[in-house]
Image (cartoon, rainbow, N blue to C red):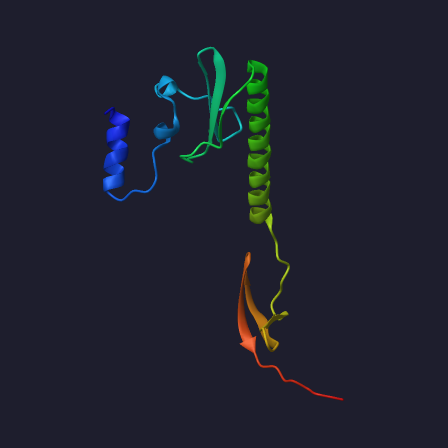
Length: 152
């Protein structure tokens, strides 16, 4: 047995349910460093078996590949890799934009504002809260009493 097989068997015996990333890599490329396109969390290997182009791609710390294909031609392989790179760049940019929006969020609440929460399944319950203190992006609230007025 090779070293990888021994590690997989040992992990299985310890109760580990995940396989290492190397398990999914063909033997031909296990010692080759992957490409890591700038601005992405993508790792791509290009290789050939019997003159046919292959490729495999992983994202971030994932152990399973997002794809592993044999391609009819090198141009098809390059097209797939380019599409994957663009997709991951858009994803990373979108993720950074969401983080920036969260960081820059301002709520606009002031001391004395009244907030309410409506909840329930078979009946509707409404709770009311008053803002008692504003601390930057955080507010301190206290529950206040409410009165139900019925009219016909």
